[in-house]
Length: 170
Ligand code: AR6
Image (tube, rainbow, N blue to C red; front, side):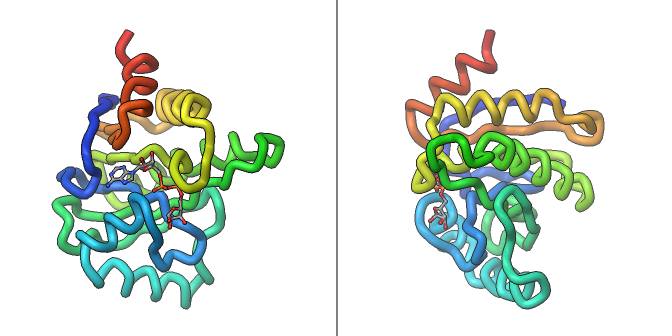
């Protein structure tokens, strides 16, 4: 499994699954979530609403999958990152779970290429340096790597891009 880092808008990436940094309502919001719903169109929200009716949203650290609507990707995996609350509220494990559970769901849906945004580092205020370390560490230690071809970390801001490059390009 290859691991890459790029600086881009995740709504432009043609992979089997792009991951969305959603909230537990699954009803959309700002940041990357807003961009995915805006560009992907209403079919994504329609499926999110069906998932809500079935299971009542999505818990922190968990993930659900929908169509990608008009996006170039095939699927959107919606995961809910932890809101940073000082660091003693299980934030690290919950963030790591987002990456692991998203990849498991990708594999269950025959996805081979997956693109991640920098989950929780926007509105949810997870420290970027720590979040990048957790993301890279979790992906590098993922147990079923042979079932995937490529994971791309899609950074949107320079700070995250530099952090990920430092961790990945040695
Ligand atoms: N492509 C890639 N990354 C992006 C894009 C984009 N188009 N837009 C923003 N980012 P955030 P969170 C980066 O706030 O912290 C929403 O309202 C951004 O620079 O989107 O997990 C949800 O509904 C940052 O590094 O997500 C939730 O309520 C990263 O994406 C809440 O925000 C994550 O920032 C989730 O907060």
